[in-house]
Structure formats: C-alpha cells, structure tokens
Image (cartoon, rainbow, N blue to C red; front, side, top):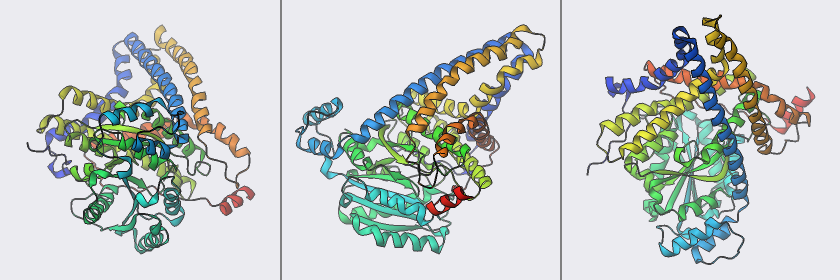
Amino acid sequence: MKKTDIEIPFPKDRGFRYRLFEILPGALSWTILALPFILSLINPYITVFFIIGYLLLWFAKSVGLDVRAVQGYKIIKEHEKLPWLEMLEELKTGNALNKDRPAWHYRNMTRIAADPVPIKPDEVTHALIVATYNETRAVLEPTIKSIINSSYSKKRVILVIAYEERGGPNTETLVKELIEEYGEQFKYAVAVKHPADIPGEVIGKGGNITYAGRYLEKYLEKEGIEPISVIVTTLDADNRPHPSYLAALSYLYSVTPDPVTVSFQPVPMFTNNIWDAPAPMRVIATGNSFWMTVSSMRPHALRNFSSHAQSMQTLIDTDFWSVRTIVEDGHQYWRTYFRYDGKHQVYPVYIPIYQDAVLAKGYIRTLKAQFIQLRRWAWGASDVAYVIDTGFFKDNNVPRLHLIFKLLQLLEGYVSWATAPVLLAFSAFIPAFFNPQNYAANQLPLIVSRLQTIALTGIFITLFFSLKTLPPRPRHYKRHRTVLMVVQWIYLPVTTILYNSFSALYSQTRLMFGKYMDKFDVTEKAVVTDEQGDKINKS
C-alpha cells in the first residue's frame, strides 16, 4: 500500500483549504477572547454563568496540575536513584540480583522471559546529536562533559556535533577542537557541518540535525550496525543529560515490544543557569519545568519536545526530521504518527535533561529573547492545519476516532495557551463595564476574587517545586539570593499574560494572515562566570 505523504507543504503549495485550517487556531482564540464582550451585550446573566463556569473548570484543572506535579517530582527523584545498570544486567540474565527493586521491573522481566523483545540491553547503541549554531565553549563544553559523566559506558555512545556553516569559522574551529579533545572517549565522535542555503529548507534546527542524521545513517551502514539497535537523542547546545539518562533510556528501549513506533521523552528542566537569569525569566523557566513534569504524567497527551529520542530505524522511516518548519521537535510526533498509521506513542523517561533559562547579554535583550523563544514554541499551532490535512484529506489508515481525539487535544492546548491567562485575569470585570446597573455583573468580580484567592494556594505547590528543583547556589551569590527566589513569584501574573498568552496570540495571528515564521531564531545564550558573579556582588 502507498505510504502516507507526511511532508508539510511548502507555503506556495498551501491552497485555500489548508489556509482555512491555519486560520482556525487564531480564529478560535480571538473569538473566545471576544466572547465575554459579545455575551455582555446580549445578556449579562449568561456572561456571568459562562465566566464562573470557565473559572471553576480551570480551578479544577489547576488542582489536577498541582497533584500531577507533586507525583511527577516524586517519580523523577525515585528514578534518579535507581541502579539502572544493575537492572539492565538483570534484564539480560533474567535473574534479580536484589529484591529491593520496583514492582514494574519484575513484571518486565517476567514479560520478556515469556515474550522476548526485539532489542536486548547489551545490543543498544546510543547516538547523541548535539545541535549548535554559534554557541560558545562555555555553553557547549559542559554539555559534552555531562554526557561523559554519564554512568553508561561511553564506548557504546556515538557523539555527533551538528554545526551550521552559517555559524562561521569560529564555530567550526570550536567543534573540531572539542571532538579532538573528547572524541576518543566515545565509540565514535564526529562534527558534521550543515551547509547553508540548501534549497527547500527553512533556516532552523531541523535541517541541521537531519543532515547530521543522514551522515550517521551512512556511518552505521558502513559499520554494519542495525538501525533498530541505535537510539538517537537530539540535544541543543545547552542540554545536559542527568548521569542516569542513557542507562534509563537503554532500559526503557530494551523492554519496549515495538521500539520503532515509540518516541522517548525525558523531562526538560530549565535550571542550568537559573541562579543567573533575571527574576521574570526564572519564573517562566520554573513554570516550564513545572509544566514538563506535569506532562510526563500524562502520556496520552505527551509529544516530542526539545530533547527527545527515537530509534534510528524510525528516523529513517520518517526521513528524519522536517526541514520545512521551525518546530521540528513537536512536528516529529505527527510525522511518526502518520508514518505508522497512528501506531505511535511517546513514553516518558522520568530522568531530567537540564537546560538553560533564557539569559542574553543585557536585561532588555533577555526580555526580548524570552518572548522570541516562546513565540517559536507557540508556532506549533501550525501543526493543526497539517494534522487536519494529512489525517482527513490524504490516504492513511489512522483510526478516525483516535485522530479526532488527538486533534481536539492539540487544538485545545494551543487555544488555552493563548486565552486562559487573559480570561482568568480580566473577564470578571467585563459584564459590569457593559451593565453597570446589573447586580450579578457587579457581584462577579467579588465571586471571582474569592475563587482566585482559594486557587492561589496552589502557588505553594509551585514554590515547593521551584525550591526543590533548584541546583546548588553558585559561590558568587550570597544567601539573600535564595530569598529572591521566593519573592520573584510576584511576577507570575505579568509573565503569564505578557509572555505566555501574548506569545501564543502573536504566533497564531501571524499564522492567520500567512506571515510564516521561516527562520529559527536561535535563543542567545550568555554565561555568568564566577569572576563575573563576584563582580556583580561587589558592585
């Protein structure tokens, strides 16, 4: 049977139907934001009930998110402490060396003994593709060192530094120096240069890592290594895996009955430089870590994000990542979903990949860089049109009910991202503005205020999460910096609206009018050294 065409169409090939679907997320978001105004003109009582119902829905949802965050944090801490290498050995031999193991480990051993899986633990090879543009050694070298510090044998690890020709000669010199310094510690290490201006590619990470992936494919073929035995993790220049990540991923990969149809998603934690970032960026970074932890507890809704892993065979089957979109990570979920006719799951790996909070050279540049990063993430709303077009207007065997569920989930996520913070903050005041004499309209702000006061108790969960996930305080910061980590949460309403909501509205509105983002705006990564920190404290 003919394979489904999984390529996102070029802008020039997007007809009237496709454009309608691109308009859909933004049109829904703006309609929902306008709804309190429209309803207030029609009937204030309907408006009041609508707003109270919406707030109660989000109150219940926020309670669920807080519970999931606590559960996720607990599981992450448990998994960080597990003896993954010993458990891998037990999978291989079929004998438990220690009775003090999680119950699911024994279930896996029993299942594998009865029904062997395709890949055994000692057959797994890891390939890590580290994408870089023009980052400095201070950013890139710690990432390589974090891989070297892994508990897993580096002689079963392939390192590929994927760098851009447009990054200039300094970048090329740096990556070659790093390969020369650290390459011998790996099974194989290479720097692969992605040529500039390849026809049909947007300027972005997708083209870079795809070019490196194809180089890796040729190497594996030359060495006679089966693609299904290789699991590929993509990392940004600032992504530093926890020491247990590779072992935990090996375990999960080697107990999966059909690893080709599965993606593996570790938990991104934006804490590398959390002490150095300005307060608003710390709030956003912690919120992102909080959300990623919650998402790991909802596998049915989990999608590829930032650092993720897939079988090399999967990447070959999907022709690697898309080179036509700036959100190649989330889009890869849908490429895989349609390539395998809906038989695609994302398995959470409850081990962190530590990433940077946004920090540029200068406060204003940092504020701007944060918005640029979030609007790029929010461009994932462009997948709505892709999913509808590919799922309903191209030949495929995806179960329709499953597709509809996934589509509604996708659409709701991006529309809520754009609308929820604004509605929760301001909608209660709208009915009284249009109906100043109406009793219900005037009572609404008071009712909502009491609901929000109760809901604010959830901030203590976020604060607990924030403090628990903090790395050790750098020596160049005094103790009062820890106090600021608590006080910073006064920024939460501002960052939620100005950054989260407005970045999503910005991206969706651009999409509505066909103003495509055809360039991956790389987030500037500044580094504060101990010497700089000492200077900051003295000034």
